[in-house]
Length: 364
Image 1 (cartoon, rainbow, N blue to C red):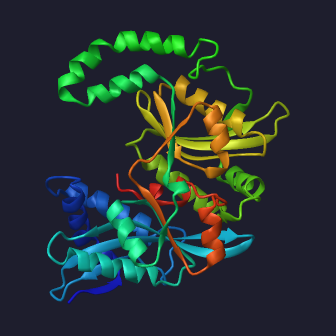
Image 2 (cartoon, one colour):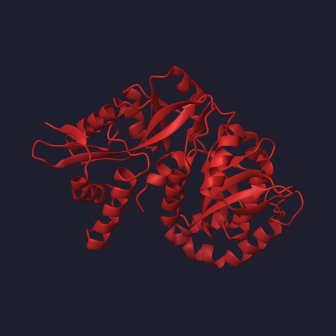
Image 3 (tube, rainbow, N blue to C red):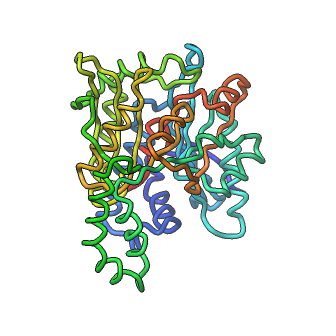
């Protein structure tokens, strides 16, 4: 019989091996990979700023002492209408393949949802995990499960798709010069949906202290919002800066002509590829110029497109900036015993971005 117990540092080698085999991060284990895993599991699941012994990560252990599954848990703090609530974000949900994998998965999910947290959240869940969550009483936040995208160099986006298919790769490489010329015309032609113009706002480095002030001032109208302090934001900035698979971490505060901060954005800049947006925020009536600055910044630094999780409160502004909306195969799942909290999330009245979810908990 399996049992569910808290994850401890001594479990890291076996959990890391399970993770490597299930997610195929490497065909073989090595000292370097083991060291990477050790740093990752300690930093994210044992040494994060919100660590709480009442909300540990979980392992499923067999009677023989083998690790049959793991579910990473990171406590976070939110508020609903000014009242603090504790959330638990799940990540790295893995089970040993085999005849009892479903049992292990169910036991881990039930143990997680039975914790003392006010809100259970998974925002990069698979369809299989969605089914498990809904069977256990959870629900899918459909609005937050959508993503938006903005083409910056549309011809190069198309060619990048072709280049991923081996038979079409030579064709895509041959057309690169032409695609660059076409994209150059698209960003300069008046009336083009891909037109880029110099933004009206000025950008500068965003510090944890400034972001804390922005979140307090510019998200006060959301029923549900994240609660941070300077130390936790600095930790998140450090984690994002360490990640390289999506490019360089960009953190920008934006000011108007009076020198007042009116918005900000965080994203991973992938020059020559698709940049991933972590968070965008703005003072009321400034979301459009903030988006314009983000698009222009990414374009000037070589990105071919931007994508991010949908914030339901800015659908109109994204649409008017020629963005497209799509589902990337990942679901945002929520579970709570507080009906008011669930209602706020399902109607899109929550400031829940990638910064509050699994994005910062990925293994890279």
